[in-house]
Structures are given as structure tokens and as C-alpha cells.
Length: 193
Length: 252
Picture (spheres, one colour):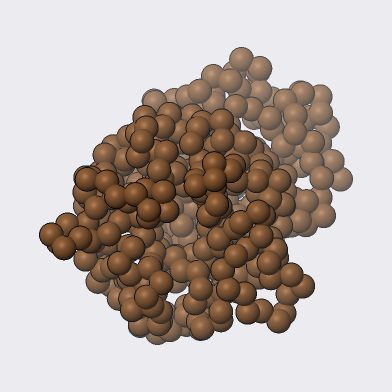
């Protein structure tokens, strides 16, 4: 099993590596096209800002590579948002894998949403053997709108896509690497896809 | 619905936990990693590791410890104590800390908050405030672990820090800390309602009812405590069951 984590200018990669280590997996952190193409699974994590992340990916032509991957790909947090069509964060065109937009929370809310919230209406093998309506750990100011590819729904004033799935592409808004047992099971599920 | 968070705090000195230890089931309760993992397994929502010697003795929080914690712990954790520069924070985050908390150094140089928020994002910048209500009824900011009084009002400093980019406020009432008589509901609710970021209440939690109060009346987003968990006066699963039965949404 060759696991690859996309190396780019967004933080949080270390936590994902450690979480994989806890379930007995190793991963290569790389922006090498050949290594990413030949990996069995690709994880696209990220904490950061959308426009600078997309600029970085485009410079290295990782934007094209990512959309062409045939193996299972898991976007986490910003990674998932970048897999959507467009983000309101600095008006950024994203990868367009998921046919939905990313908007900023608004209204009388604490922003970012920080903490544990439920993932409802799960529809993906990612959630196999995860308890029903699991609590997962979120930290985000932007959210993906509901769409055909929504594979999990969370409520924070509005209902948004906390998980997405289209063909071999998976995305979660929360941080499985910080979501205790539920997150560990989800990562295991992704690896066994 | 976003849950209220329960956060055990582990005070660290020379890489060891210092507050009272009363555990039989783990190998080494003085090891912050073991104790943190125990709490994570019991359902703690986050952990805070505070290097209590750091500010006074100018000692830097040990990055090796943070690295060990992040290998083992599968929930988010914050590291604080003596953090005074962007470089300090970079090292801690690279070693796997999810958030850092700043206190005295941020007060002395508020631009530090701005720099940290720009470099790493507000979501990982927690401003810790030690505050005390004086005879005039006002809540003042204290520095250096509560040893140095300032003339700043807690509410004003908190607002300024949030404007500069602090993503959360960790509020400790010195009047309540260690008393086990309940949290400071008044100042907590003022900050929680006034600020657009989460407020973590700290100091005074002694009974499960106190946690109900701090969430309902204090409007806190999270509650932090140390010795009641360390001495097993309150178990995290019991506390969460109690809160849930009282209609407070917690992760179980």
C-alpha cells in the first residue's frame, strides 16, 4: 500500500502523518507528479487560505494532476474546499471536482466554527462502521454548499456539506486526524477502499 | 449542533505534569502524554498543556514533548506558557500542536497576535487572559501567571486581541481559580456575548452543576478544569452524562 500526501503550502500535514502512524500506516509527503500518480491512495489535507493554495498548486501543475487521478483521493478541510468549483475566500476558482461552491459563514455566529459537531445523513463507505451521526472536529470559516455529491451534512446555523463524494474523489470538512475514534475509523475506511 | 467542550488542563514543569496526581490505571501519571491519552480516551474534547514555569523562568516549552503528544493524542490540543515569538509558535505547530496560547508576551506586544494570525491563521491563536475583579468592581488583566497587575480592563483587552486576530479567548478568573466554588459567570458571559470568537471559561469548577452554570448562564463555549479531573473528583464521562441530561449538547 503506497499512500501519498500532497505537499503544498498549507499546514497541518504533520498531524495527518501522525494519525496515519497511529493506525499503522506510513505516507510519502510529496509534490512529485510521478509519485502521486503511482500512489494507491492520495490524501490532500490543508489548513490555510484558498487563493494562495490554488496559486501554489497551479504553479506546479498539481491542479491538473489532482483532477486526473484515478485512485481514491481524500481532501481534508481546505483540501476538500479546493476540490469544489469556487470559493468565496478571495474569490478563488478551485479544482471543480465537486460541483458546488464554498461560501463564508454569515450572521450572528461565532466564526470560525471551532469544535465538535455531528455529521448527519452520511452516504459514503468512508463512514462504514463509524457510529451513526458521529461527532467530528471542525475548524473552519467557509463551508461547501449542499449538492448532489453531498455525502454528509452538518448544521451550523445552516446545513452544509461536511462530506462529499464523487467517483474516486472524497472530501471531508472536519479533521479525521483529530476526531478521536470516529476519525481513525474513517481514515482506516479510506485506506481500505 | 456544535457541542460545548470539556477541556482538561495539564500543567507541565520540566516535561512532567505537576498538579495532583491520583491515578492507578496508567503507568506514569506524571507523564503528560500518558495522562493526555487517558483523558482523550475518556471523552475529553480537547487538551491544554501549560508550561507553568515558562514565563517566569524564561524557559521555552519543550518541543520534544509536544512532538510526543501529537504522535499519541487523537484530539486537538493547545500548548501555552512562555510563548513570545513567531518562531516559538512555528516550532510548536511544526511539532504537531493544533493551537498555541499566548498571554503576557501578547499583552506587552499586541502586534504578536496579529503576526501569528497572519502567519498561521486565527484558528490556532488562543489568547489567555488572567483576570481579577478588584474592589472597584472592575475586572483587570494580570500578567506573569497572576503576579503582575495591569490597569487594563479584561473586556477591553479581549476585544483588542480579537480585533488583532485572536481566534479564541481562554479566560481564567483569579478570584475563582482553585476555590471550587464555581466559574466566574458574570465576566465569562460578558465576553462570550460580546465577542465573535469562542470563550473558554477557566477557574472555579468544583461540581458538575458549576459546568451547567458556566454553559447556561456564563454562555461559555468550553470549560477548562484541572484538579477536579486529576484527582478524579469528577469523571469526564459522568460529567458529560450529567450535562446531557440537563439539556446541554456535548459529544458522547
